[in-house]
Amino acid sequence: MLLTLATEHPQALLTVVARTPTWVWGLLAALVALGASQCFARSAGLRRVLTMPIAMAGFSAWGLASAFGGAAQIAGILAGWLLAASAVAATALWLRAAPPAGTRFDAADQRFELPGSAWPLALILGIFLVKYAVGVELALQPQLAHDSRFGLEIALLYGVFNGLFAARSLRLWRLAQGTRPALQSA
Image (cartoon, one colour):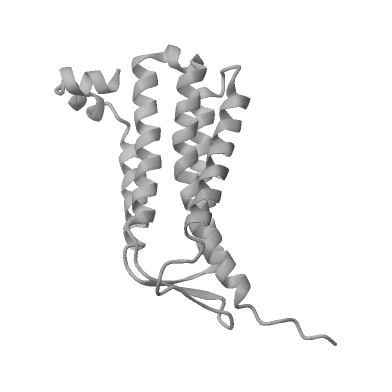
């Protein structure tokens, strides 16, 4: 319906945007700032590198639960999300096992030197836009909250984004594991 609305009555999108709660725009600004900060070379600890995909997975799970939590098929929708995320992460790791060129891990300081990348920003915006579009769709067609096909399609989209995030962090975690000093025996 949202796509039809955008193509046949584009002026109606102004109403959708105008009726969007203010806090949504604040959240978007914070997410854009977070993603944009990763477009530049930086230093980050292992905990911070692992926190982002966990937070984005939580945001996705919240999106699914808030949209489809009252539906009988929520367990299947969540299972589809986890399956998609796992399959995408495994495939992404298989296709590209190494972290991006220029990535370094300093075992003594427990910090990564990371090259800038627009990928985190793209993934963050993808997750946000799916959540926003689903919210608008459900406002226009509340019965979709009980449509298992629609729920599964959304879960698969979230799974793709979360799988790519997970693969990125797993590459970095592997790098950190490979550069840790061996334990001294007593």
